[in-house]
Picture (tube, each protein chain N blue to C red):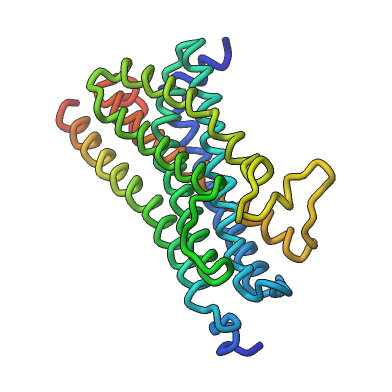
Length: 53
Length: 241
């Protein structure tokens, strides 16, 4: 298959790829933000449990 | 009631932790297959050309925006009747994900509309009702953060979600009730889908991937919310986080 043609998307590259880029950004943020929060909570609670036990 | 036993944070927290990696990996695999089929296997549309590939993001995102809201409404009703705390946790965890999919559907729809309709936005019934859905999600989220007492916040949120449910049939039937620019339904029809399988299969696979994504992220968010609520609980210390 021809990669140039693939990325060109029949002249609609800007429309098609911006949609896929937006999906990537929105889905990544949906994983990253809660995961970062959760890891922080875990760390804090583990420290608390260690110091109180 | 057995459901209430498993709905206790003490049981749900480890259960969600065990299930999460399975859903997450299944999601990654399904997403890979869906993207491959959608970008490489599906043929370009005879009218819309390659822009039809936007559909594999746009349509599953739009379906998810409504699916998540419907599940939230179901949980809100159960929560109001049986007073189960876990449904409140679920609703507040699901809302940001639903809002994300709604935003994604609106943005990709707008980008698709520009080359095909010649405009980024029209106040068409389908587009307007989907925008209202975004405001319902955002309204729910700001209501939750505006009320300090968590029980009152949960109750008010559940009622808001239930009232907003009226918008779902409006979104679904908007393309039939009003003469709109948005094209009518072609998949969820009583007489069967009107799309060729080469397009329909990637669409359904992407739908599955987005569903698995929702389940994975909602479980993660629920675990995080349980840690917020139960930070001082004994079971958390005994089981370990």
